[in-house]
Length: 233
View: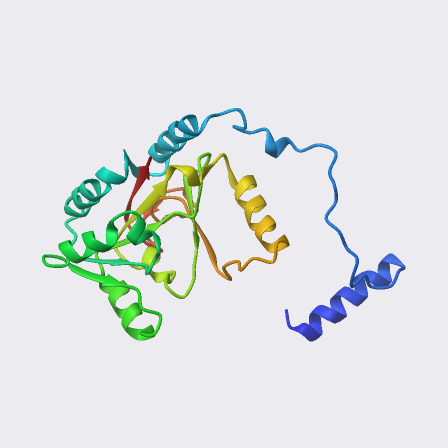
């Protein structure tokens, strides 16, 4: 719908309602009940990890758990399990915090390793298209649906988790929340505080799935064929 058509459409609706268009002063309703806040709200962080692990079984996703000290070993094991010969990862500050900067340099001696560079648009895309594995951190993780949330920025292109054959999500345990409700709350709160919020947010639940009218599940149609979640305590 074009802007011109949108204005005409909204003016028509307002006219049928018998009132002028409301263009300001609209506030979010304060609902009297909030059932969405009750789901899993009594669970501890470790219990949410259990919910996430169980849901991973339903979305054909491998679940692993480790700590910062063991992350490098688990990551290398996963790359080998996927027979990865080339990997792509974002230019993320957490690479340094979790010891991945040195790890990527080390495995780069044997495996083609590419870190996203926002100044190299076409090169980023071309490498992502042929990469065996894309690796990212999860910014918010939804236990109920086993969904990782990615806030994209200039150092983290969408192609990293979309184009490679396999995908690995590194999930800091503290990012795990019960469900989409809490993710939306965090985003709304950041906007209300005037913080910079990613213009593009991805919600990824395991490998790419598609089903035709006969309900035959096809994996990997619009993205990675396989996925692994690594929860880091």
